[in-house]
Each structure stands twice: as C-alpha cells, then as structure tokens.
Image 1 (cartoon, helix red, strand yellow):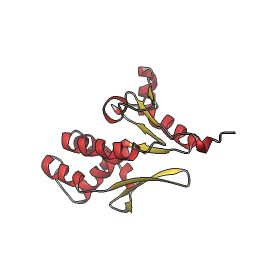
Image 2: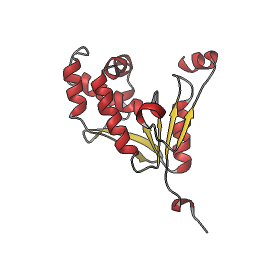
Image 3: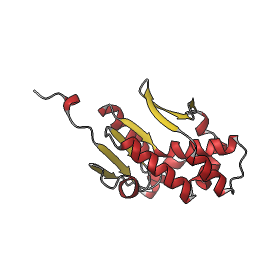
Image 4: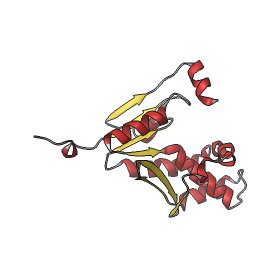
Amino acid sequence: MMRTDDLKKITIAIDGPAASGKSTTAKLVAHKLGYLHIDTGAMYRAITLKTLDKKIDLGDKKEIVHLAQTSTIRLEVKDGMTKVFLDGTEVTKRIRTQLVNRSVSTVSSYKGVREVMVQEQQKMAASGGVVLEGRDIGTVVLPKAELKIFMVASVEERARRRK
C-alpha cells in the first residue's frame, strides 16, 4: 500500500488579485499537505525592513537592489507557522508593521529586486513540497508548477477584506 509520504511532492502556485484569499488558502493548503508555504510578500517585506533599518532612501533603487542581492531570506515552518528569517535573524513580526506596509510597494516595484526574489522563490520551490502565492506566481515565478490556481473574489468581498 502506498503511503502519502511516498508521493512526489509537487509545487502549487496560487495567483490572483489582491484580497482574493490567496494567502489564507495557501497557508491552509500547505498546512494540510505538510508543505512549506512560501509567502512571497513576506520576502519583499523582509527586504523593505532591511532597507528601513539601514536608513536607505526608498528612492535609491541601486542600493536597494544591491541589498536584495546580498541578503539571505529563509522561510521555515515552526509550530505550524511559517517564520521569516533575514540574514539569520527571525523577523516574522517586524515585517508586519505599518512602516513596512507603507514602504513595501516601492521596494517591490524595482525590477532588480523582483528578479532576485523570483530567483530565490524558484530555488525554494525546486524540490517541490511548496505552496507559493502572489501575483504572477503561475506565469512568472513557477510557469511549470504542477498545480496552478487562480483565485477570484467579487469587488465587494475584496473591499471587505481590505478593511
């Protein structure tokens, strides 16, 4: 008889617009399957946190891209939760502050930062057993994912979730 731990671990990509339920679904699926939830947004938040900690001007694209290239971001499951480590230090709670919230869109808008993050996400996903969520996950980050899901929600539901 085949056991579930004998099955090949696949990559699952969950895509869709903001507030469509991607993160909640990804966390639940990863937990249920015993997979790693790769919170791509947390990775961008970690670079944003480091940018803010080092007091780098948010407009200094070259320095922020360099920061992304020389930083190490690791995600691991501890006690059923995905923890975020930046250069070896856990920053899971620190990346969820209002200051990071206000700054992350600027940092993530830089092409060089996105290129570094995509490479890291692809490396993390290479051996399977992962669930990634975010915009362009199924087309840019994991175009060959074994399972791709595109989530949608009504405008009213998305607005309710953003409150």
